[in-house]
Length: 233
Image (cartoon, rainbow, N blue to C red; front, side, top):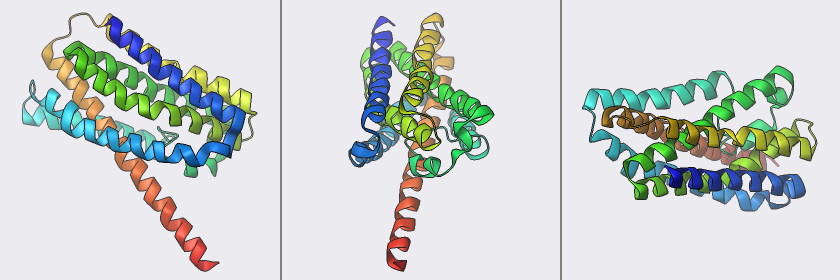
């Protein structure tokens, strides 16, 4: 578990680093961040399909496995559809044009939703590390690739909503700290059974699939809109 705490700390620091770069340079390096977003989404899909889900299936029947994966996917889908985007880097273009989540209750809701996302990231690394250290490192690698653009995107979204770069930075630092909370929750979960550990991993695999699908769909939609605008002009 100590190794999980260390790796989750690194992932959190990467998110803070992305936020710092965004506060300092804002859109100047955004063209370099977007390819990293797409890479992280691809890695999420691959590690979910070929690593997390097969590992969790070993301790679950097909109906329970499908329900757990579907629950993880459905919860993130419902939050992202009806409450607030749960992944700022996956939907950065859409969020930059929608400032409802940058102030007042909207900001509190967005912060809570993103903190949940971060908490699950930390719990995922901790749960995977409980199964096997090498497995935990693979899940950490997938999350770590995502954390830098995640912190960067959140700052840009908050700045676009009218907050100063450094206000946006400190909001992002606070939200991303929830990743450490997820790791801490995993540490407190002493000697989990194989069944419940598999349920958690299946849920997390479902959330990874949602992030990949929604992010890549947003990218294709944005590209299509851009091409249509360019064609009109």
